[in-house]
Image (tube, rainbow, N blue to C red; front, top):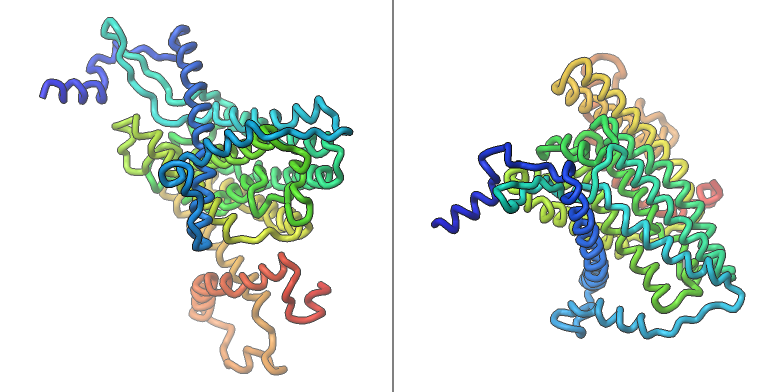
Length: 460
């Protein structure tokens, strides 16, 4: 019983607040914490990268009714080790006309941002660690939490485009160069929507600090995904485009560009590009969780009482998002390049502007009327957005005439009165899911450029 009481006392912390020392105020603690946190983050990312590959191969095999890797080690868990050994001893071939310095530098420009992007994201609530002499240190779970952490993420994620671009240019290969040009265009296009969608949690938390953004989402119903689901969807799409994840893997596009910017890479240099992609998958999952899913918050207050569970809760959210990304890759085709660019400029960017305006209106209303008015305003704006989308979709899909006659004459309805207006609003709201389901085949045909209903529609 005494041992159990000591464990409970260790988890709960000291009774006297005066013995608690902030690690950020102590030079020695801050130095040790920085070194240990950096090593832990690198270890987690490198280990996570290795077993994300196993997760992807096994999950896609499950989708396709296959077995997946199951030979190296129990249940195939040593497959990343086998792949790493193979790539270490694989011969590296450097093109004769390649720019050697840039050719070597490009993979590092791709990997280093992936390893450093999570430096500003908190991985859990601060921990109380006992030390000699009866003192306790309050240590943050994370490397650092600056008040401009969001700007750090935006800056670091934009560096990775240089790795892809320089790899394509230095390889002296036309396929690699085309892949580099595609990467530059797509990243720039989707970064506009990315920046606008990130502005939503920044406005809701009134801070550029990830710690403040996560602390603003305590409780599951305070998660920002419920306050602006449109911005969350746009951010998720833009983040996948930022890391060139399928179906946005246009820079490599093996069907038409062999392997794009990685065509002339082999051995460990190819492995570095491969590693950067999977580490970026983990990175964007953590960032998305911090922005819209409460970060390490479990939604029910358990983590606040047991800070060590914060990392496990965040890991659970990351694994769920990784499975979603793998599911998308295994089920959604790669659209044509020009249609993907049109989607980013003509659909995603305007919707991102709408999501920012949505949040701006609700924040101003909340400052004037409080939390209840804020929730009411959010519900009203969501209702207006859904009704507007339903009206546009209904107008697009419903013909104005049936057999040469006006629809209103056939059904013989009156367009006057409050009852008719309420019926139209409720009917439009209920018709949105069915209209979206009907719009899905048309969207697929539009993005692929195949299967049009008639020649005039194909020309348009």
